[in-house]
Image (tube, rainbow, N blue to C red):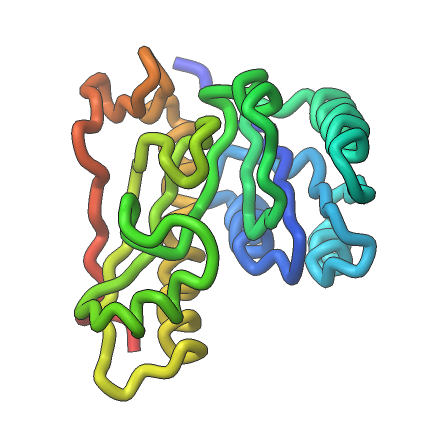
Length: 223
């Protein structure tokens, strides 16, 4: 059997793009049968743009103005940039824009995200602070398909770490981020191997519907 063509990725970022960097490095190392066709930022000063170029990726910037009409223009320009790159998969990696239902529906089943919580708990922003304030004993990250409802698409893979009594928000965030750099490329590798598929509004792995996410336990491994 011939090897499948590399999965073409478009990665969307807003900031430093550490997950984008982890994915691009995995591609360059041959750990993923994938290639980054384009990295798009919604901020001209996003540090991840320089990091992407340093790793040989093409970059683009699509800025959003203020107001409802600006969202229409932004999504039209963003969609045009994505489509010109002909991706198999759109990867949200710290992309801090909420996309319209219509935009998400257009790419349904071809767009994934990583969220720093054990979804469905703690959707939205400031997850590390909220986890600490909630007195949780465990925390982690979730890779999921993007659907119109925010952070509510089918979860594929989660990491799990302990919340320690002495944790600050920054310390907890760093420990979770270290796991993100492992589990996000792993999910992309499953897609590149055609083990993971979107079907009937759900994630299917190795021919079986995922009724609950796969969990990778880092509680003993991450310092």
